[in-house]
Amino acid sequence: MTKRILKHLRTKVFTGILVVLPLGITFLVLKFVFNTLDSILGPLMPAISVHFLNHEFLIPGLGIVGFFFLLYLFGVVTSNVLGHKLVGLGDRIFKTIPVVKNIYTSSKQLTDAFSATRKGAFRQAVFVEFPREDNFALGFITNEIRDLNHRERVAVFVPTALVPPMGFLIYLPKEKVLPSNLTIEEAIKAIMSVGIVTPSNLSVPLSSLSPGSDSKKDNVESLEYLHPK
Image 1 (cartoon, helix red, strand yellow):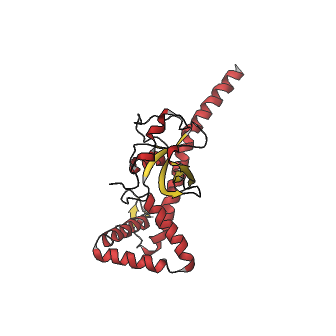
Image 2 (cartoon, one colour; image 1 turned 60 degrees about the vertical axis):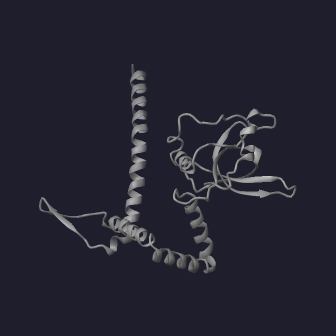
Image 3 (cartoon, one colour; image 1 turned 90 degrees about the horizontal axis):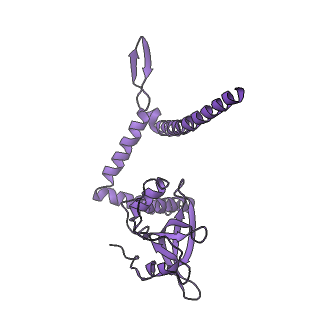
């Protein structure tokens, strides 16, 4: 009887942990983001209080409102001709500073690559056999090169699901790369959602790309992926 009660308690407590843990992690992450954003412009915003039940309460989050309003202003300014010129001027200035230029250029390339409004940063979403044969990972073709034997290879960036800016850079022969038939935006959504936002049926067979495989004819070797429309 005692063992049954202990087993029941252990099962229910573990179930409760599985329910509370993601809620707690979500709350802590949102709290961290809220406090971080609010602290940027919060000290510059006027303090607004509300009287309730003979108590005075300060309204939190005004720094976040100011932060998003500032982002909106940046978006409006950079959408016109003068804004483009200012952004271009800022790019040139940051790229002339010895230490800052490396950080700025890398950050800008990374944000451009994951931006749905920028075209050409990622040339095509593909599947590659990674980390071993017959296991497929979703990646992006970023460049095309030739080795010393004049063999064409493609640079494929395979991002990690939980931290997309991080990942692996793999140089593969064209015949080892399988087109996913997903748009760049669809592939980014699939990675950002750890596979949750993914078509239920893929339009390509995920089979081994080893020599002699029937799926070899479906690789990117004959596709004009380097010049997207």
